[in-house]
Length: 438
Ligand code: XLS
Ligand code: NI
Ligand code: NI
Image (tube, rainbow, N blue to C red; front, side, top):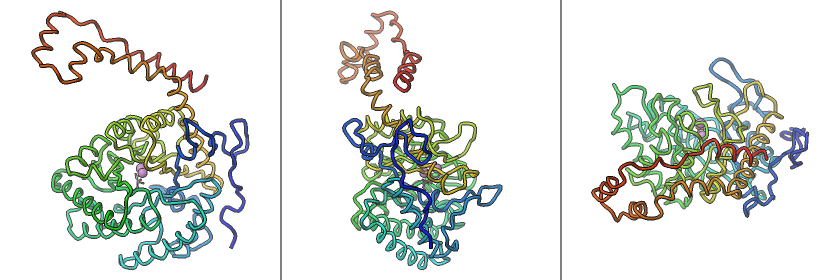
């Protein structure tokens, strides 16, 4: 059989002037930026599901791409062909991590014992492939949303039997994550949410989700998993209401149920925007709570109301993302391209164009974010904006050495305060443009 992607070369860095479609223009793995190699700032990961499984089927039409990789779909031979293709793909791009759902790896059998046997077999094969490379698992997860048994959720299902199947899948996915050296384990809500309150006990369901997560932490730690667990917030889709609406909601949930020591956030750009936030907003909320763990790198379409999972192209968003990441001191996880080619971009070459685009976009974002920080005007402005808290009454408020009555007396003495300083948004935005394009 022919080598996967045999007509595609190893992707070189050629710089911004290059017109070679199969070369990086900005991602220069060994280039030092803000004291570290680009590749260390940007641990990129391939999403098994979008890259090796999804082939363009949507609600209105079937596959446009051929992801058979020379084998018959739905067989273990195909599962192995996907591993071969995945490793060839990552090597050509210099991508060092992958992320997977259990059922991305093998065809799911009717009986979970048989699915698990297949997972053992394929993970042995993946381990074999990993030997002699520096490719590792970034995170693993269990798909607890596709199989019809999860129609009402997994941890949040009304059926205790379904809860047990969820537990079985999480247990196995944790085993696989540890076996493949994973840095993290993700809980994306899947169908953990509801369609109508007329049939739903929200408190009961949330308690059960927390229970499943506690059981996962206990089991994970017992088998030597030292990485982070992540919640990946998303406000809707597939359910009308998803419990992990956004970072703030998920962090509150983790604290309420005593899970905040073991969990961090995996923030997906397109999920943040579906929640009515910017990507940067959810990153900041995670970071200030010490919970910025990992990123699902993609972008949505502001004209569409669903998770379009496009490859990131917007350099402003990538810059503000990297600004947050740099300020937070980096990620414990990485940048997983939870992104898929548009349906009409169906060739193997398009798969490479997509990753080149995504990696270059984040490399540019990193360079520009480092330049913004080095420029220092934004930081200085923010610092000065709160200067009134440095001395006098402001300092007393900050240190908690005052009372409401004292502050009221102070206000009465002033009569009317001066207007707070100008926000200067347009000026700050022009600084960003200056640094990006200057
Ligand atoms: C779906 C999610 C999913 C998670 C992993 O919207 O992004 O792909 O990342 O289950
Ligand atoms: Ni998503
Ligand atoms: Ni995701």
